[in-house]
Length: 116
Image (cartoon, rainbow, N blue to C red; front, top):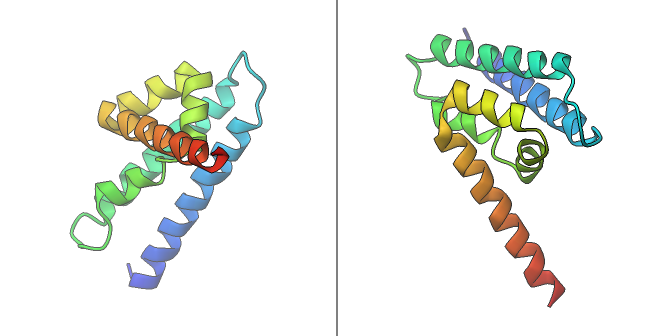
C-alpha cells in the first residue's frame, strides 16, 4: 500500500475511534448499548488488522494505535461503563487501561492548577 493510502487508512480509523468516543461520552449513565460495544469491537479488529498489514513498515507501531485511545474522554467512558474497560483490556491488555487512567489523572490535576 502506498504511504498516502496507509496514512489515509490510519486517519480514517483515528476519526472513527474519536467519533465513537464522542458518542459514548454523550450517553446517559446506565445501560451501554450493545451496538456501541459491537462497534468498538469492530474498530479494535480493524486497528489490529491495520497493524498486521503494516507490521513490515516502521511507520506505525502498536503504541501509535494505542495512543488513539488514551484520552480523558475515554477514561470517562471506561469509568461510567465497565463493559468498555473489559473490552479494551481483553483486546489490548491492562497496560492500555492504566495509560488511559493516568492520562485522566494528569488532565484532572492540570485543570485543578487552573483553579488556583
